Figure 1: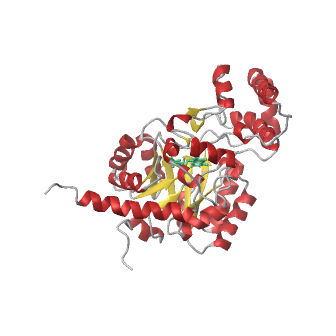
Figure 2: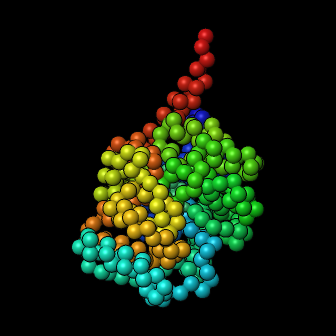
Figure 3: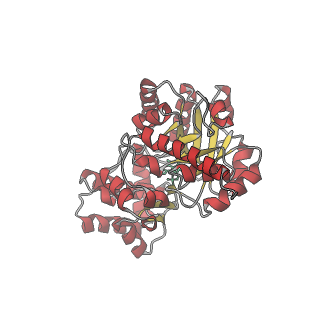
Length: 371
Ligand SMILES: Cc1cc2nc3c(=O)[nH]c(=O)nc-3n(C[C@H](O)[C@H](O)[C@H](O)COP(=O)(O)O)c2cc1C
């Protein structure tokens, strides 16, 4: 069978059919279950397990769960925040520090519980720390997955270990300065993620970001991320200078995703304006669905605590909301392209309709000149 016009050099390097990635999406393990990762890889793209908040044992369990479902290549995405001190204390110590040093933030969360009628609850999972992340990385290297992606931070210490076992490394960026840092760190691909994207995001939109990054780090290849969800946006990413696309929000509506149904409804019903930038849940700027908690946070006038403290502060609230079945109070990171998405489909349908439409778009562009 003839190869698709979309089959770029990246496909040969990674042994995949189409240059389409399921983006690494952490959100406490809900967004990219092994079933979704395997479905995207089986369909000819590459699934990426978002593992940022999962401890190393769970990372290994999920990698092996994907292997049980597919023999196709897949990757893992982790966060490597530079601000994470080596000896970050455990969650109980961080909670005690927040109680002592940030009484207004504690009062804000208590008020949230009262306002929404939630019983206080403690999230006692291990918090992110230098040690937590090192163990996650060790598992990825031991398991020799195809791709390691760093969603944040400096992966220079991971690159030699990954290359030694034949893995490729990607680094996600939102501006040229960080793209140049990733290049210096030795990554194989830079993912340029625009302002439109869901989750943690920068300030530069993709029309400016992708070509500027591509020029700055040439010949290092770029993968485009943010607001890519159909054939038109896929081709646009390639036209702007990328060799592949990294897709988050569109795959949140895959039937294999285990996102809260309430969150999927918000994406289906929401318009692009409903997905706004906030520091409320993690302390870093993230694009989330605008819910009542974000509204209350904005009204409080408080400044977000540095990562990971804001997360520790809000995790207890999230645990309480989850226990009470109030997913509408939990952060729903998703991008501006939600305004275009209309319903749930199997991951394979999402991917293949993108491929078919992209091939048609390329053909249409090739025959646009008037005669
Ligand atoms: C629910 C959600 C969770 C995310 N979590 C992570 C993460 O843990 N690590 C990361 O590198 N990027 C994360 N991102 C960003 C994605 O990797 C990707 O860059 C983004 O979704 C692309 O934009 P799009 O949502 O418009 O497709 C997340 C995005 C979403 C929507």
